[in-house]
Image: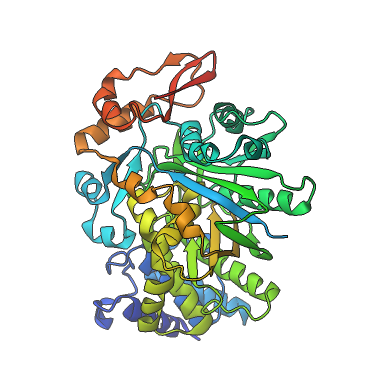
Length: 83
Length: 409
């Protein structure tokens, strides 16, 4: 799975958690906070995406990520490592 | 042997502040207000501390007991993350002001918001061990907010205590003995690393809470045959740092474990979880006591035509957590009603912004480690007169050579 596919999984979950947000608004260089996600929304996007990808990322490294590109990189790295 | 909570009472201070007003006053983003699902939070007066909250929660339970029964209290376990001495436990003061039998073991436990559960489980095990048949344990979870350098923590930080009498006569909650799933590991999420500071990473704490809930429940399920998160528990009580967190956590478990659809999750939330929030949303986060505020909320506000099983999740940053369960008998509602919790919460004095700021400043003067200082009522006399005076509550009178002196109002 490449990074754009990982991004698609995250985008699907953002659309589910934040129905107000359109797919076009979700950009790699943006952040969940920019999209209006509160703390509960953010954790839902992150945990639902991990479930869909079948990965478990250490919480400490998740807490350091502050934009979507960083999240895609982190998930992609873990997919690659667990494969 | 039946073992569990015989009697319970909570104390949530005498003054409160409207949470939306704090948002406006601090110019916090209003769209984050709904996420909290909070109405009010309790605010302490300068003559209130972890000891006074504890005693004020416990005194009604103790006064309801016969002298013979009272003498069977053989242990006082206090949990707090707001202690007043590194060595001497606050149980010593509590034991003294409640005039308990000196044939008693007194100590304090700490593990952030998990502390209350740690204390309760110790008490349950003492009673169940049969080491002293008929013996009772007084468990008190008590906490006072410290200043947090986290904007969105302020609207939820609160004060208060819950007192529980644990015995072989569980009229409030009979524990499902041994039905427990635990999950603990080292994480630096939220903490009190300095005597006057609460700090940490709220997002990390949220993720850790959820991770623990799911892992604890899975372990509970492994131990308890035929258990099912959707059907085994009539009601659910979770540690409630803010009510929105509980809603998110319930949704996460239902979705992850059973792929439940959002509309079904919402119905289940209203039915099984919402009653637990009835006091939490009007009090705020009382740290190690909060889970038991949620339990009181269920007993007072849910339907108990028959006995009901409650699933409980305790989480304390750092972190330690467990999911356990118990049965609330039909009679619990009548017994808890005697404590008039709802009335007392409604009677709290509603502070305006000016009074709130003034109390925050005065409270900040009562730092850890003061050697000598009397309490001067004058700067908050107006609030004191309206709330504590003549009410028979315990209040701090002052500190003399590090020894804390209390008096009944």
